[in-house]
Length: 347
Image 1 (tube, rainbow, N blue to C red):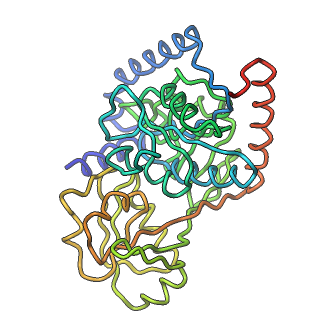
Image 2: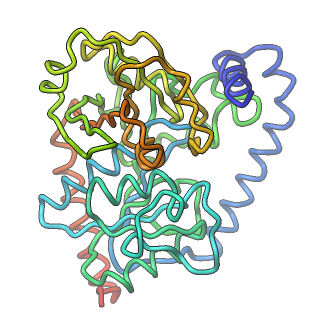
Image 3: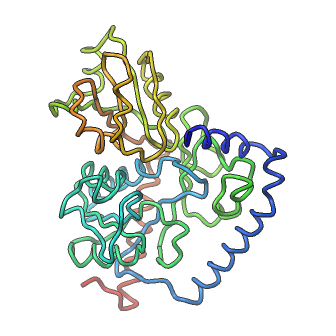
């Protein structure tokens, strides 16, 4: 049911339909509330961490591919000498008064599926809490070596000061250009102009003007029951001729299925599930025998099923302009120099 409702909403949000027109008055209320929050945030002086902070977010409701960007940046910045840490809301977990740290256990039920994946994929320190300034403080207290923070989502979390904003889009672009609930936008289209970089996660088309294209490519398959890991090319050779299925509980499941098919795999069944599905009802049992491919985000939850058919597909982000990360590196070093000069030197 939830999936059907989501599909219906995305249908009416793709164009300016009558249903969208009828919802416009509510969108005006959303716009007013957003302007009020922004005004209050400007007066409240957002919390300023002592290290540079990068927000990776979106203005479109639903998943656009932020988490692969966070993972890629963690790895790229670490290769350039930084010690990145990550903060996140921790979607789907019950938060208490204190932030939760990955060092105390990187299970999805503790952190949420995306923070758990980031912690496992990068080894970077991770802290989660809906109030991200609290997560930032806990992260720096527990990991004083952290010298740059990446916020997985949080573009609209105005209580958190930031030095760089990266907005991730996908093939939906800005939909019909309207705010929720008449359209898919959390903020007006004009918000894109204030971003430092825009990443366009759309393998089917060139990046939009001013954006950096991103393509996700499979690089490794991990057998969840045994832990065996194979390079994607080796997995393809080993499983040539077998009927395969795929399941995905991400914002846009079709994107995962398309990636596998573009990589040369023939899928006999696909199972799209609601984003952040917890897998406790084991929907995979209805799929045919043969390998079942899932995303790395799903793997942190469905590995406990013990299903010998399951393979997690790990991906890498490939950017149309790899040099943008060098520009980000330079921007962060400038930001740290500014913080040091202003007396915000890290402990």
